[in-house]
Length: 166
Image (cartoon, rainbow, N blue to C red; front, side, top):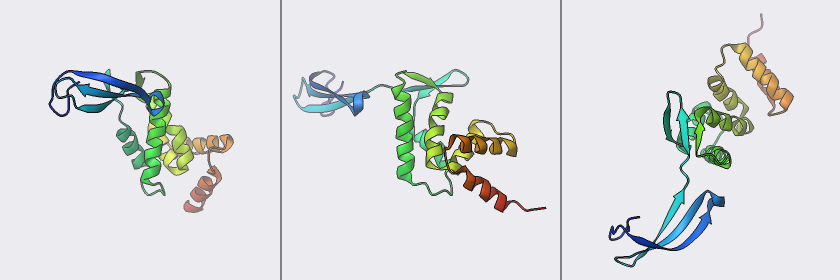
């Protein structure tokens, strides 16, 4: 660890504490050259394996940006998106694995998003679950109604009112 003041490459650990509910370690260090103190935070790197054997670090911002697209035009705030991103990251880290597949990330997004906004959930799920036609949407709405995930009746009513009658 390089000292942020004099850039000396050696330091001594004075104190270590668990932080963020065990997700990281906070260390108080002292530079052996200039004797100034500084703090470092060590966090487990969560990796995401994607199709094609590509592995990249988990990015909460990437999760939030993907969900933001599904929430476009919906009454969802940036704070709610940030909380959802934190919830997704926490659930993935709670599994205790250093590497998760991208499908697990998508699955981790679905439940908190269904609780946040039903329409945004359906938008996200339509891409993630590869919906092919309107029947796929109706099947998902019926599942949501039986599992009482949201007020799916309002979704069906709004679709009925929006569709022209023959």
